[in-house]
Image (spheres, rainbow, N blue to C red):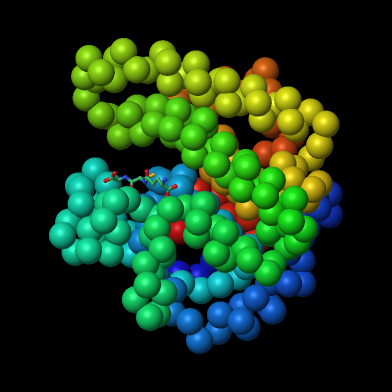
Length: 234
Ligand SMILES: N[C@@H](CCC(=O)N[C@@H](CS)C(=O)NCC(=O)O)C(=O)O
């Protein structure tokens, strides 16, 4: 079992949707055994660790080493045929892969998912945007560079296009955030978690966030949320 301990106490300035709610949510899941198939450097897996921290839920963490292809073993493929983390295993053996689906699953009934119909659809809107326009570009560049993937002719040719598309996604986010603090309904939600995961580490692979003041202000607000943890939190 992994327990979180680095509670961030700088709470006053931020909108705090989860305040006082975490205990109730934890009670709901009290008897459930949750297993997260995880990888420490994965932003997609970090999304889940972050939401579970906000909700103060305990879970078992099974760490798979992507670089050693531990996501492609027959044992793991039997759980997630797509061979990727994160994947959530419930105590009845059901396995739910896909980071944003897992976020949605846990956020249901909590303030991390908007309560109104349009707000929920807008949260999905931004989560689909993240998976189509943001993550395949920024996360892929990060993976290639941080994991020292050999530069094949394909990667060499694809890199500039991935960077360009990554900046295009950041432009969309900047435009949206210029006039609001959070992505949906003026409060922190799983839409913010989904987009924060790879945006806040984009600088690691030289995406320059200086021209994006609204994104930087939003990232500061995200980091102020109750029970926030960093991607490196163990
Ligand atoms: N759409 C998936 C993407 C998951 C994904 O790409 N996971 C990567 C780590 S971030 C992975 O497990 N790679 C290992 C592999 O492909 O074998 C999600 O959002 O969960």
